Length: 154
Image 1 (cartoon, rainbow, N blue to C red):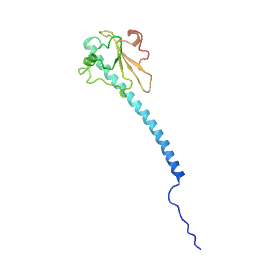
Image 2 (cartoon, rainbow, N blue to C red; image 1 turned 90 degrees about the vertical axis):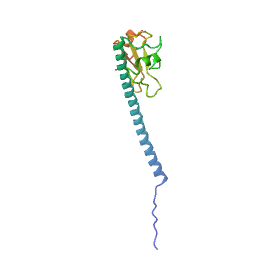
Image 3 (spheres, rainbow, N blue to C red; image 1 turned 180 degrees about the vertical axis):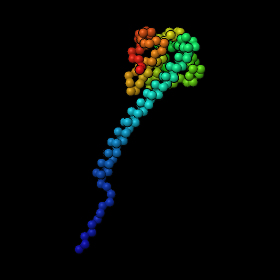
Image 4 (cartoon, helix red, strand yellow; image 1 turned 120 degrees about the vertical axis):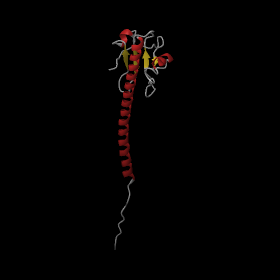
């Protein structure tokens, strides 16, 4: 008597579930790495944006001997005050930057001084603590009422 042996072709449900679990684990690791790279890229964009604003403010200062003033006693969201925008664009910078995420915008401070001998720009990083970039003095806090400039960007 000949016995017919049937060979099974295909995968069992357990094998398929194991493969799906492995793929999902690997994809979650890759996505975490991509998110980290994206946040570092946004921080690099912030750094470049602020560098271009610092150059524009420096050129403005060279022409006038002071910096554009922010509203009295307030910080100006960089740069929503029409007088600051008009002072810098388009002569010193073509367009003022905005934060890549627009969640926490840059803030421009002159401590309500008009004309402003100093300024500070507050930057909210994703991978570092928030800090200030200063112009017109070596320390943000010394010339700006001592109330801000707790952390100077490096």
